[in-house]
Amino acid sequence: MTARLVEIFLPESGIAALEVILAKHSRRFWRETVPGGMEKFTCIVQQRYTERLLDDLTDTFGADPRFIAHVAELEAVIPPVLETPDTALPADPDLPPPTALERFFSRDRISTSELYEDIEVSLRITPSFLFTVFLSAVIAALGMRSGQVAVIIGAMVIAPLLGPTMGIALAATVGDARRGAKAALALAVGAVMAVMAGALVGAAFAVDLAEPELSDRALVSPGDIALALACGAAGVLAMSRAASLSLVGVMIAVALVPPLAAAGIFLGAREWVPATGALFLFASNLVCLNVAGIVMFLVEGLPPKNWRITLGLLGAWTSILALLVLIAAGRLVLGIGSADFLSAAS
Image 1 (cartoon, helix red, strand yellow):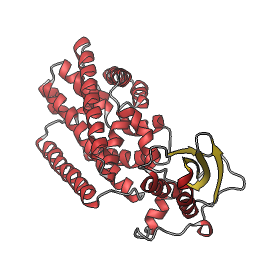
Image 2: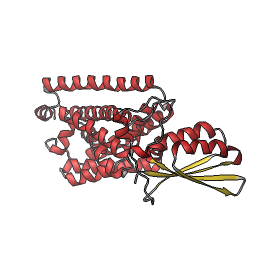
Image 3: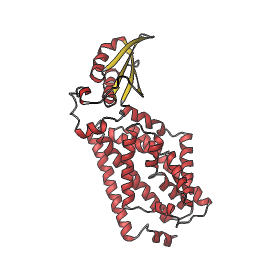
Image 4: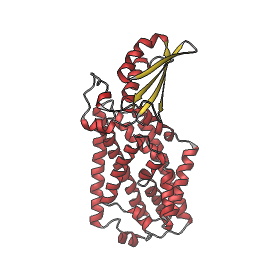
């Protein structure tokens, strides 16, 4: 279903302005009086128009403390709300017309506000978040140590670092410094917790560096970079269509939790060289996820507050990625991080 039900509460003095706004963004809306001298408007909005409706409402009524807007997903509408050229509403004259590519990718994207709500809860550093990261890393570490792929997948499904990772990319795209700092702090705390959990496993159990599920996390290859870029792009596409966070986590956590847990195992076992390789893999994957995430958010038509800031951040992430690629290439040429090198180092 590609429609949203928007409920708007505001005082009677704002009715005239609201009716003008709703006529621009919605084909169906109705009004009712509610207690407290308030009016309630309910409208059905095509999903692609939800973003600009919420922006218009915020610009007009955002300063009024009595204004409230609720957005809910609709399972079905009869007659259906079709998204065709015949049902297209006039474009905003104050904005440049969207390209064909933006229209194609943004036609079933949820609004920025809904994206924020989806990840906001995972940006809070709570005991539940810390325990989830710790347990996810322990599960991943034990799975890699024993070569049990199914156990590693179980750790991926938990996906504790999904929200902070997507939060950084989203904040960079729209230019939200406060939310970006909050996401970065949550990711940093979660990363330290994951390394500590892996270190406990490495200190408590014997570590076999020849185990492929473990040793592979100490290596960085072009395939790993391509995987992280694909994960970031796929994660944004799924998340912007309100896919299950657990399903998206399978794509994202594969590039974050296992390398952190592996780094902890190597540190706990005092294997410094492979620990450095695992942390390097994590850094490479994190940069790739942000580059791919920002690009996909922009392709989907997510509106940046300041294009200069957004493109500057994308350029910075891309430059870091280029540097990491050069370092990875140098390590491969010198043989640093190879299986033979790790065996000799241990």
